[in-house]
Length: 125
Image (cartoon, rainbow, N blue to C red; front, top):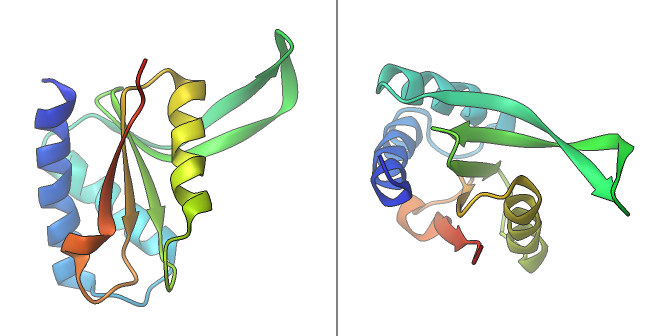
């Protein structure tokens, strides 16, 4: 399955979670529900994936945590905020570069229209 096929299935799962739970909950609730739904839909998904920070060819004693990785190809960064800011897009772009992944989805579930709050971010590897 390529990234586009995976992202299509992810979008379907996001719609199910959003339509069931609605807006206004904590990010951790959406993460757990989406993890469950993606697994139920037959996708290989891992949550809270540790991403080491490499600086000057040295692994630092700190790491990032990716919300979800699906099929070892697509990073999902979930938010439950009033409004996405440019830093949220930059954060996912950095995660994609550090993880050497091609596609990420930035999703804000604290919204009135989920269609306008799923954003594809492509890393030009």
